[in-house]
Image 1: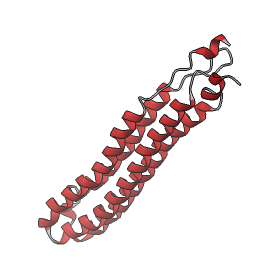
Image 2: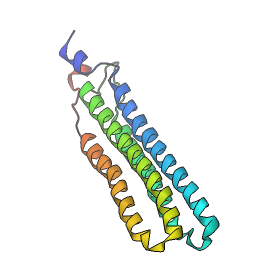
Image 3: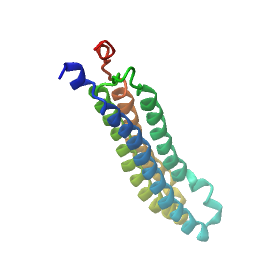
Length: 172
């Protein structure tokens, strides 16, 4: 077995596509959880203080941004996956693993951030409904929760740029 077949097997793109899937699915699960949990809090708070509903929609918006992070990383990774040529893979295991790591990094960071935004958003909007002075504190906590997803996006973008080109496979 040649070195090219070991570093560039036909199964290598699977890991890249799993990175695409991981980035989008996990980030969207986090976004959905954050949206749903915060939405429940907003609905509950809106019964007592309907004038604050639009002001307290911020956690829902912040949770939705997490899904966009996953979409960005998924599109970047997908654009880097190359088709086999002449029956030989042009996509290396190294690149596949880097793309899987990037997808997991963004997706799981988005999931964690979505959970944090959902919990803080739910409790925060209910508290703001009773005491409006808590609004700034809630926003600061939400910003730090959103930053977790942003950190995952940044590291995923860096990881997605790692690649190894399989140049010799077409000549075998």
